[in-house]
Length: 83
Image 1 (cartoon, rainbow, N blue to C red):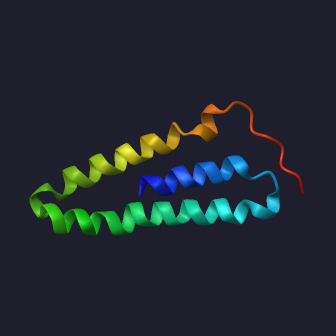
Image 2: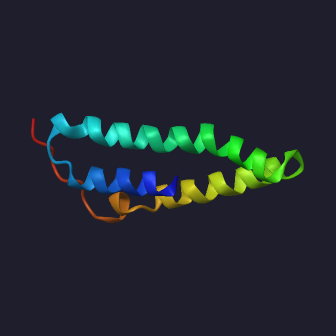
């Protein structure tokens, strides 16, 4: 799941044309979809109901911290997109 967020940031860095923003949006959408839809089901199966909330919250928080501190935001000014 974290690889999806990393892939979306790498795709965003390489995108210089507006026509290719659909790729960034697709990869990021798949990453968030897997984070908030698939991952809770897997955690529930693996750890049971007693540990569910604590595990899901810690995994979700960790992935969101990685996403916010990504290369895209630490790379200086955003390049201009060509239309």
